[in-house]
Image (cartoon, rainbow, N blue to C red; front, side, top):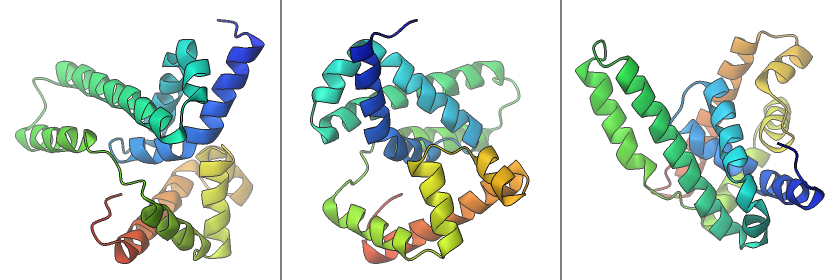
Amino acid sequence: MRLTPPQREALEKLVADHQGRLRAFLARFEADPDVVDETLQEVFIAVIPRAAELSGREVDDAATYLRGVARNLVRLRWRRQSVSRRHSENAAREIARRTMDRDLDDEPGDSAEFLSALKLCVEGLAGHARKLVEGYYFENTTAAELARAARQSAASMRMTLLRIRRQLRTCVEARVPGAKL
């Protein structure tokens, strides 16, 4: 599919404006960073026909729409997994999936207080950790690329990013009671 220049421009704006938050949203429901990346890409591919309209909307309105597309893709993936694993899936896994499915409908609190707390928490990270967060979430650098630059394995880098996310979650939850990351 070849994009027209206006379509490309609109899609680039959507990706720049929403990729970080959408990636964080998806990471709440998918543990595998490769699956998160794949799903994120599928979201933006799915909205290509509406990219111009979405890029012209208010940021929060477009974000809500994109999260809806992401929700549908996550549910579709879960259904496919459920069908392929129907006989081997244990009861505990099914209960966890149902709980996460309910959480999938919750809109994240993008309040000014939450965003301010997140910004302060990111700024409070050690220099190396802050650079990793900036590279991964804001500069579209993959975990594999960050790992190569740090002379680490990709698995080690993903674990480092997981620990940083946990640290950020703890920090934000301490600053904003009731915040749910």
